[in-house]
Amino acid sequence: MVQTAAASRARTQPPGPLPQELAAVMWPELPAVAEEMVHEIGRAVPEYRPLLEGSYRTVMLHCVRQNLTSFVELVADPTASTAERDQLCHRLGEFEAHEGRGLHCLQSALRIGARVGLRRATTVGTRYNLPASMIVAFADAVFAYTDVIESLCREGYVAARGGGDEAWESQRGRLLRLILAGVADLGGRHGTRGTADATATAVAAPGSGPAPGSGPAPPSPLAELARRVGWRIPERVTMVALSPDADRNGLRLPGRLDDDVLSELGDQRPHLLVPGEVDEAREAMLESALGGRRAVLGVTVELGSAADSLRWARQTLSLVESGVLPQARLTRCENHLVALWLMGDPALAEHLAVRQLAPLAGLTPGQRERLVDTLRTWLTTRGTATQMAEVLHLHPQTVRYRMRALKRVLGGQLGDPEQRFATELALRALHLRRRASGRPPAGAHAQGREPELPRDHEGN
Image 1: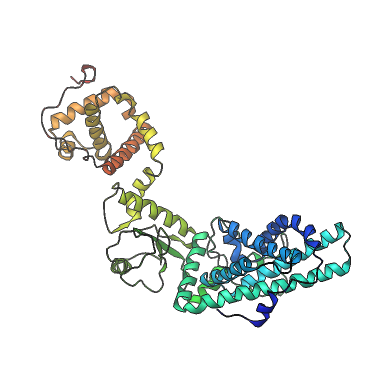
Image 2: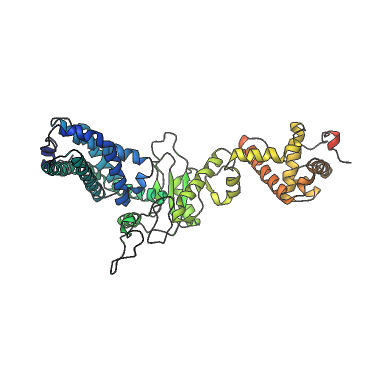
């Protein structure tokens, strides 16, 4: 691990010539200061904004608190151990390298933290009537401490950058995560989903127009990272959901993906991003690279909707794995949108089925199933008794008998367009669930004499 002499000397010294009693004044301020620092970092450093909107915010808040705690501990006791802080800073540097960011983001965050700390020191100094000389000494201590933190982070960063190709791949992985987080704004060409504007630092104050003679806005984090790794940002993308390995230790594909395909194979639910449509050539490439692994092609969408495409692909993959959809190595989500919609809320589909088929509740299970099969076939084919008999593998007279019974039981429900549509949706969802449970499909009953329905359901 690389270490600088300045950092090694600094970390063994107190942050500055501050009276130890000052620590008692500083402790109560730490929680509020940490929150303010994280807020300011997220506002001023666009690269960190996606992290601060999710679970990573807790991690960053912990890092800020740990560094603040170490600072105050050194004020209270210049001989206090900094081992935990040092390890944390090394990991921060490693994380920045693995995420594909330069150190300038972390350096900006440290400077922002220092400014917030100095603002709070001025407020506290006024409250406690601290002399100006102590505020100046505090500022010197803060800057010295910030230099130490930066040196420690740099050590971790330099050590992690030794991977070469791995560092490049990590940047491509981070590019994919930015896209899925919605940071897909590129000068207005692409929309965003659920995140603040990635170029907020280049926007003037609310209500003001662009400054006269101002140059072009700086590129967004997505555009800058794409440029760094040589990836051309597409207008439309197709997400691909992959079945994971059983041990979940990261997926390794047997074949090679096209160079412009982004991948996240270390995720518990691995996935790919394919620029544009998946045509025959792309499909052949995927089949070769996946080596027989099951995958689902999401819907091709605009870049800003990539997260939707991945969500639909994962839901479709779940339906394939559960047996609702046919088993296949490569499934196109586009071909199963109705099934995906119907199975999106199983509880609601079940409620709809109970409501629409309530008139059949008084029949035996066998009678009800036979009528449901016939009704579904009629709704989907609108065929004659002879045509339906071929689908159901029954005698046409049996089909006519069932249809008379259905019209008697359901009455006007079959004549009302809205009720008929709702019934068809309910029956399609039931059919999908039957397929998932392994039950035989509709019409699989053997031919023979139809058992009688209760007399009030018979036709004449």
